[in-house]
Length: 274
Image (cartoon, rainbow, N blue to C red):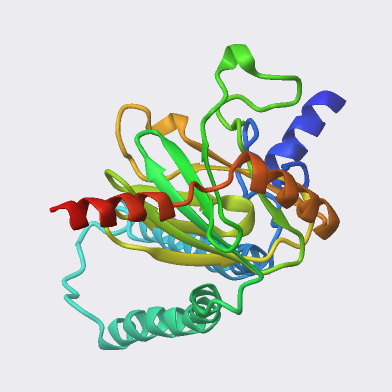
């Protein structure tokens, strides 16, 4: 009995048990790790859900009332009423007022996501078939991020979400993400940060987040991009500023971007010969 009660409680209130990745039987959002996501969760839990619940209960009441009040056995002669002006005005104005009430916080959330503050860290995410490539333009760092196969997973690494090279960012810093694609449409999405942007070939979309706690956060490509769409996850490791600086020192050696100055010199020499 107690076991069933616990399962029922977890089913009704999933937000209290979910982590930085999707879990079995999850109904709600992942635990937010940024103000943007916290705003989204608030809007959903305290604005949308109450309104949806109230409308559903009201419509259900009207259906039940109509079935009972106007059943054939009680009304052998059908009503010939064609319309009611008062009711028609009400059912037009009330939905409009509801939408206006919803629009105010909705616009606020949308504006906060599109207005990118001054960035402390800039990352470029490039979608490929089927993996992600990343650049830190200010740090001369470039690397690819592939999903770890099931046979290579280590203890604690989630299946279909863990990658060989994680994106590392500092906590409580504004991170701007420039997103594009090399081949087809992809989408860079991290639920815990409230981030989702399409990756379009030949175009750069921008988004941002500011993680308010450390941890490893998982996302996936959210645009159907081909046969291996489900196998290009996104992993972001949020660390302290000290740990981030240590990672930068190693990454600048391991993932240093190749200089193109030598290629430029070769091109000039070829031009001179011609």
